[in-house]
Structure formats: structure tokens, C-alpha cells
Image 1 (cartoon, each protein chain N blue to C red):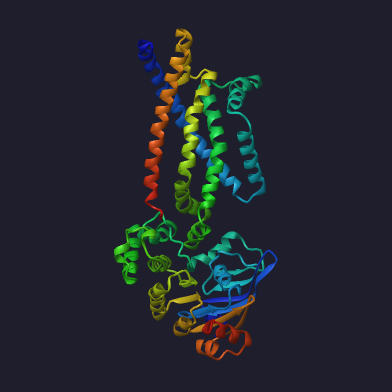
Image 2 (cartoon, rainbow over the protein chains, first blue to last red):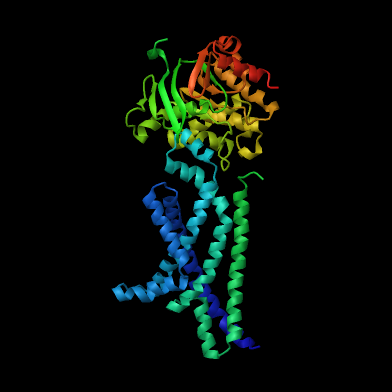
Length: 219
Length: 254
């Protein structure tokens, strides 16, 4: 095993992870989650048109490959005069994608809160939006942590696709060093190991968050 | 009593769910400080009446008029805002408490006064503490609802309603979800409120309690008021056959 290569390649890859993979994941997740909330609320709004738009959106996002979505935005849109740089392209594609999946999670979590909680909010004089914000979403948050963590962990790994639209992140560093040194197995295994460590950290964050939110619910 | 004296006058209240007409035409007069017990078989529409008064359901027809307003005629086109204005005058206590599990007891109580009525937090807290003390739960202010017994949760539910300083208190079967040994502590609180002359409507199956606390008993069946009057009259000497059968069934279930 080429220890020297392992050592010299580690820092570029880790730095690709810290300056590429992680910020890309975080930005896409936050934007995606905000959009997911909007889509989920459209779905449960009871307005046929809004609900149909939301269903259509979720269907398109879940029914097409993420790589294709990424390529449409980065390589496709320039044909109609819309050129977007690699980073914004990646963030747009990943947040749209996350929103498609997270919308269903958020919708289910909101619906899991008993109807009596809405009524209790209304009876103390709250509007629907205030009830949603103060009463329903805090309770829905607890329910949605495990499935949203799944989505986030998938996203962290999926950002490796951004290497194909020239975003400098963990996997693109690995590819460049690999093609230069021809040590494919070693470097790709090393990249895999770093992704794995990232995800281990995320999983422990999930447990901590669940514990924190568990204070509120009966067992 | 003429309608103008009443705190609340309900006339011709109607409500259907799908094709099912739950309320055919309900008339009610509530005087200040009067306790009204709504009794009747399940499915008779008692709870629906209560929910209409609190704006949790929108009636299909009829008028709900508070003295001094709001007064809403549901036979005409009613805006959502108008329908919800009824909520400003009343507060509801639910069968299943419906406390907010992610908030402490104190936070549950001050949520409405602070967030909706925009009262100063300090005042809301001191009111809440006084009310909690009254129902014997001063030491539970920082607990979460799931740490409380059903009877304690329902007492918090009552305090949450009182904290809104409503003119009318609505109780939807407040003891039906409770273990039998916990019913008493909740009924005691309601009885004390009656003695303080709160205006209340109580949907209940506790006929003995209704007879003791209520000034008027309203017996409903099939979406109409079959009979109403003094508790002793309605529950001991009912005029109507349907009332008689209902009272008999509750007194001798086997």
C-alpha cells in the first residue's frame, strides 16, 4: 500500500469535503426543506389547484434521476440562453430534489399531529398560520427527524454527483488525484471512508437531536 | 326571559355533515351566570352545538348572537372572519384535554393570552399562577402535560380556558376520558366555577352532576331540543317519552 500517496491525498480530499461537500449539502438541505414545507402545505391546503401542482412537482422530482436533473440545469439550460455556474447549478438541483422527497415527509409529519391540537389552537383564538407555527410544526418536527435525517445523509453522498458538473468537492479531488496517480482502488476507497465518517457524525447528531426533542412526548 | 337579557341567544341552528343532518333546528338562551347542561344520547348533536358556538364548526343556518356582539346569521353569506369572531367570547374545554405536549403547563396557559390577546407576559403569568393555585396545581407549572394524570391535565385544560377571560365556558364531556376515581376532582372545579357564576354550557353524561350544578338541563335527541327546563323537572319528571327512556337507561344500564 502506498502510504505516502494516502497521506498526501488525504488533505486535498478532506478539504474538498469541508469546502465542497458539506457546504453544498447544508445549503441544499436548508433551501430544500423550506421549499418542502411550501409544497407540503400546498398538498394539504385543500385547494385542488395548489394540491395538484404540489403532487405534480413531487412526481416529477421522484420520477427522474438526480443526475439527469443536474445535467438539465447545468448542461441543458444554456441552450435556451440560461447559463448557471457549477455551484449555483448544484445547489438548485439538489435543493429541488431534496424538496421533492422531504415534502412527503413533512406532509406526513403534519398530518400525524392529532386534529385536536389544531382545534385547541383555534379555540384559544389562533389563526391557522399561528397554530401551524406554534402548535403543529414543533410537534411535527419530532416525528420528521428520523426520515429527514435519512434524506440528509443521502444528500451528502449524492453531492458526489456534482463532480460531474465541475464542482470541486471531495469526490472530484479523489478523481483528479486518481487519474494522475492511477491508484484508483486506493483513492476511491479513501474517498468512501471519508464519506462514511461524515455520515457517522451525522447519525450521532440525529440521535442527539431526537433525544432533545423527546423531552416533550410521552413514552 | 326575553332574548335581549340573555348573554347568548341561539335560534334555528342547523348543521349537516354530508347528507347527515346533525342539527335540525336548535334554540338556546343562556342567561348570565347560568349553567346549562346539554344531555342526550350519543349522536344527538350536543357536541356539535358546542362546537358551533366556538366556531370550530360553521353552521349551515341559524343565528348565534352574543349580547353586545358578535351576532352572526349563518343563513346569510358569512365570512370566515365573521364566523370566527364568536371565538372571542367563549373558550372550550375538550373531552381529551388537547393540551400542547411540547409546552409546559404554564406555557399552555399563557399561550392564548400572550400570543393572541397580546397581553403582557408578566400579567399573563401571574394570572396563570393564581388560576393554577386555585385548582391545586401550583407546583406543576413547569411540568409537561405527559407527566400529569388525566384529572390534572383536564384541570389545566380548564385553567387554559379561564385564562382567556371568556364570557362563556364550553365543556365538551369534560370527564368522559377520565378514570372513574379522577372524575371528582374535575367536577369539583366545575362546581366551584358555577358557584362563582360563570356562564357555562356543559355537555355531559353525568346526570347526577347535571342535577346538582345545572340551572337548566337541555335534553337533545336527533338534532332537536326535545325538552328543557329545571334539572329536577327534566331529569326526575320528564314530560317527553324520549327523555324518560334516556334517563331510565342511564340510571339502570343493565
